[in-house]
Length: 379
Image (cartoon, rainbow, N blue to C red; front, side, top):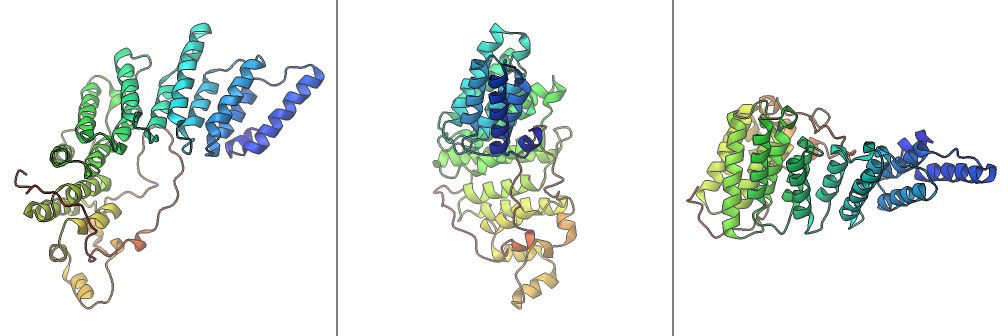
């Protein structure tokens, strides 16, 4: 049963559980216990089915009705199932409801059922996947409670989850500033607690929030660009201990310039070239950098960065330049996906992305970007 559960084979797991329940009723025994239900709920959490949360909750209800007592693993597995029910529009709200039920239950039973950091983080993860407009205030309120009460205390994953909620928001025009303020709070708390030591991921999410502020008004764009420049400069200065930019940092910064600085502004190309030269110096020219660069730097400027042999190949029309064609020194410090350090929480398996050989040519014209009306001289 546990083997089927680990592969997310819910049909086999549910069938085996139903058989054991039937045998218990027939023989008048009580062989089905908390562990068996936990295995079944875990199977749904791993199934990636839009029904995962509702089925896991149904099993929790069934446990209680049959006198089988749930434990902390039971509740956290149900929360996990809801956080992975991405096809369910109310998954985050349902997860929060289960958390509230967990809190109530913990007051009536031994303290071992008290929600822990994993419990809260799982709900925060659910909000980070939610398209609901209320995701930002709900996730922010939950994190604020964790910070204030320390029951349970937040960890780095708590902060990055709420940063993700902000970055994905399409309604908060000041999301870049809000994300930066949350990062500042994390940096402040990290001085007191070592377990809150920020990683480059937190900085990258703030830059991502800036880059995706292009749909807001001009004041919001200026604010987002200022936040991006400040955040990038702080990270590259080395002032944050054991935290340095990676290729995603540079990709997000270049994307922010492309999306937030007007096309006709002279600062657009200058900023793009400055960031690219720093990126080359650090050996962090990755896929995202190479993909976004043509959106803010002219063809002529791009060619000025390339070694002469590559320029001659392009001008002869022999081939288009791919990431793998660039000098090895430019990408010497780019980590592969398998080597990237992620937060302590296990991340779900991602589909394999196209190889770098499919990256579009850098010499192609930039994609359309909505043009802002301000001049960019304030930079």
